[in-house]
Length: 311
Image (cartoon, rainbow, N blue to C red; front, side, top):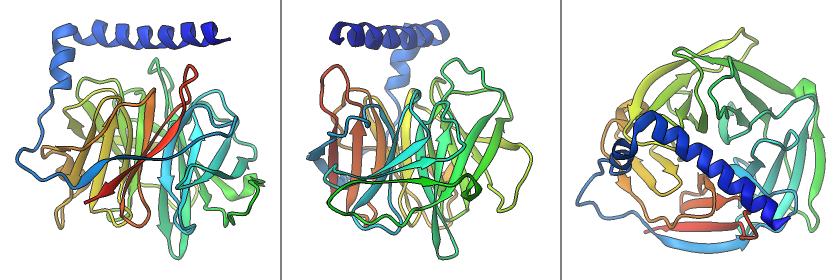
């Protein structure tokens, strides 16, 4: 079993490396990793602190992460492609607290999860936006009201009825893209998706109407000088943005009146980060005290929830 996982993992890494080298060339790829950064700034976060290990056998390929809106110390997460349509609630010590199945939904390639507030209610947005070969004509965002989970001694298991799930179908205006990073901006009320494999990652935005609609267009509104983006998040108030790839975490402090595309056009600050095995997920803490990262459980390596405290 271990050898099979090892072959599968390195096969996947080879395919992605070959994809990069074919499109970009070795020199250009190296250049892409040496991206512009803000200089002379005091780092706003400390180094990592392990908070706990993911031990639930069903959480093996964690891909998205976001702080709960109305559940103190809660974090919502989900698996990558190949899993059922379900979301998991963990606490800030990585303990599994609840599982919710999304009735009547197919999980094609779930890659990130965000949160939004409408009125007094929080809603989770699950981004079915993965597309390794950039062939999907459309992608999907599933929107559900945040469950009112109670963290009891045993994990809760429940189902969200199909009637309470809103599905949005999206199409990129400039052709199919693979993406793993998504967040909802609480200031301008727009969803942002960042492409993964481009040498300069495309930034896309879309508004999600409250009523049913036809296919929505993901409009390209910017470009980040980074590549292989695997996760992103925005702080609960919208004033800070995190973007990560497998090796680095980038941070922007948003200026008053600045849009997300305007903020991301400025050089980033590189934050403390130690690469994790297939580390894809990142999220601000709900109380603003720092940010979390979480990886897949890979080749026998543990999936650890790490916290980077605000200084």
